[in-house]
Length: 105
Image (cartoon, rainbow, N blue to C red):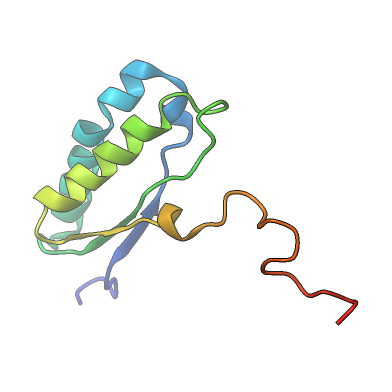
């Protein structure tokens, strides 16, 4: 490629998840950034890999809105791909005796 750039990996959004207005406008701002980046580089089909941010709603009250906004951009842009790790994370420890080594053997 012209700039030696094959794709952009984008992981951002936690700060936006602190504010309802920022969270609700995230898709618009993300699309604009992607469009500007592609135009500035002259790479209109530059792929973006968009990673959904992960956070605890009690600390990031609008994280679900940001996640929805990121997913919407990935769905609407033919050169964007979504990575969502949340379904694969262990959010609480397994019950005692499950998934851990037992020293009593």
